[in-house]
Structures are given as C-alpha cells and as structure tokens.
Length: 232
Image (tube, rainbow, N blue to C red):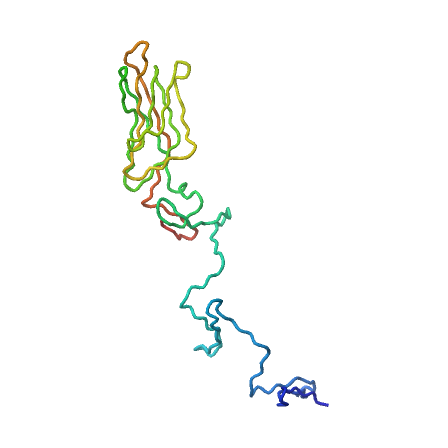
C-alpha cells in the first residue's frame, strides 16, 4: 500500500516508490514549492529580509545588503604570546589602536643633570629641558642636593609645581611624584635652586638630576608578526 503525502487541499506531493534496487524511498514531486515553515533572516532595525540569489557560478548564495553597518559584537586583537588585548583609546592627544603601555616600544630613558655655584640669596637654574618636535617627555623623579641649605623649585612652562628644601641632616632630597607629568613638544621643565644658607652667607655648590623618558611620537608603532605594522 502506498503512503501518500498531500497538502490540506489534497494536492498530491509525494508517495513511497520502489527503487531499482528493490528498496522503498520517499519520492517527492519538486514541480511545486514545498514550504517547511518559514526561515527568514531580517535586519534588526529595518525588518528587511535577506534573499537567496543565483550566483554567476550557478550556485545559490545568501544575499546581504552591505550598504549599512553590520555590528558583530566585540572584535579583539591579541598578542600571540602574551594574549594581551589591543585597545582603541586616546593615546597622546589622538585616537589610536595600541597595545596597553604602548610607550614601551618607542620610549627612551632620559636623565638630565646640572650643577652650579650659587651666591647667597640668589636663584639659579640647575637643569632645563625643552621637549623637541616629534617627542613627548614624561618625568616623575628628581634628585636635588648641595653642600648647603637650598630651596629647590620645579617649574613647568614657568609655573612652579613643587618646592623642596634640604637641610644639614639631609643634604640630598628625592622627589617622586604620584603620577608622571607629560610634556608636549615645545614645553619646558626646569629645576632651580635658591641659596638660603643664611648662617655663613657665602657661595655654595648645588646640583639636580631630572629623571624620566622621551617618546618618539613621529614613528610610534607596533610591529606584528610577518612584517605587518600599525603606525599611529
């Protein structure tokens, strides 16, 4: 007895037939459409449906309208060895793709030293540094001292940001700031001292060292495997 499949109207769609090898198989008449529910891919905002189209090679493909942005969640780029993620954020006053602490790739330690003999009640610049074009300068540590009492001033673009004074019990002073101070091209940082050795009131020797690092912004980049490079 044949098993017949029909639609609600009784139209004959399929039955079981005997194949050449003697086994039975479901034989489907493909002259008409057979709907197996409705599977649709639609745009979340416009409700437009993605269609199936015939390609030039004779195969069918899902046609997606790419005229608008398609958001695919979060895309991450990670380092091969450390699995550290690449971020997109503001880096040195412009948006860039960078590895966390990207400065380590293009930064160089910078230490500036200066000394001077200073007459009593006079103020002299011990160290001064102006950031050149194509670089940034960051610092957070200064060493200051002398063979007499002195008031040490740290100034950025002629604005005083810190003052320390040594003494007979502590001739050398170490200043470490909580955060690095970042200077752009053209900015200046200087360390000055005033001789306040009022007991003998004569000329004394003072010195200072400014510790930080420079960043070469003109070629700040990250080299990836196989020779690829992202330049910021």
